[in-house]
Image 1 (cartoon, rainbow, N blue to C red):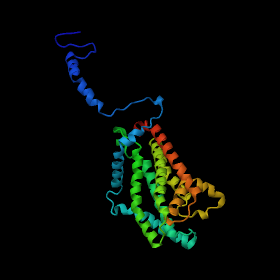
Image 2: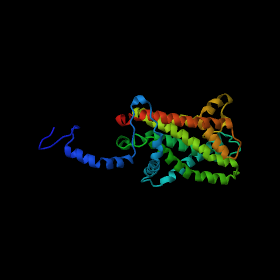
Image 3: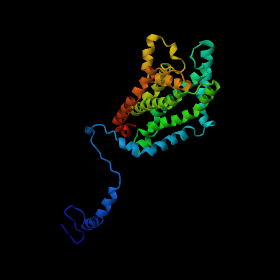
Image 4: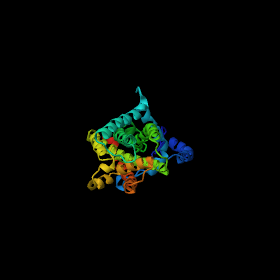
Amino acid sequence: MSSKTGETTETGLPAAGAAARARTGPAQDAALAGLPHALLRPESAGVQLNLQDLWAYRELLYFLTWRDIKVRYKQTLMGITWVVIQPLLTMLIFTLVFTRFVKADAGVIPYPLFAYAGLLLWTFFSVSVTSGTHSLISNTSLVTKVYFPRAFIPAAAVGAGLVDLSVAAVPLLGLALYYRVHVTWGLLLLPVFLLLGASIALSVGMIASAVTVRYRDLRHALPFLLQLWMFASPVLYPMSLVPPRWRWAFAANPLTGVLEGFRAALAGTPFEWQLAAVPAAAAPVLVCLAYYVFRRLEDSFADVI
């Protein structure tokens, strides 16, 4: 079809526009070829893990972590010092209770060092899980408007927790020097147990954050659940106080192996490898399972958040 006012081609485009498209088409195609492409698949194709996006957006994890740290201590009088005050005061209280009234025997490790090491790891775990659980609903604008691997949001909470842990570890070093802890090769395993603890915290945080988007009840139940988990873990008491018939239940808790292994590596005492084997086997499985569940629920975040 043609007319004096305008011509159209077989494709229905104006003739002038089609001619311009023919002239600039190869240049535009070359420019577009260098841009990243996204392949969209239907839900029937199954859960798309998109692991390559985790590497492509890796720098974003750093910025989200740094943002969480700045927001957490913004307009606070004592700033990041709070990460030291909380476990230190708790350690002093429980040292008084378990050395003066209960008389708990922590073995060769002095109880203040024993308690502070446990509280250091537990505070990191509980804060990371709590922050990760609330992370998605606290970042609604990011989740609904911009594409990026959403798993980075709860992962940033764990990253911020690791920064807090590194600051709170300074008094732990002072206690180790005060009690003249012997330096052994076991210290090389400290990062291993920290990694296992961080992996478990990341797994719980990812699943909890994804579930919280749809069911906000978890926010109210989380403090109670974490309190139960703390008492079910040897944070403030040694495993020697656990009756033999219940040791298998405590050993099944992956944090038990992390706590006991961390203390043994710090003090240079023998390891209970049966306890350490549980988190070593469970942590990778939990991370993979949590990421799969997170990706499965991620498609509905923008609709229900």
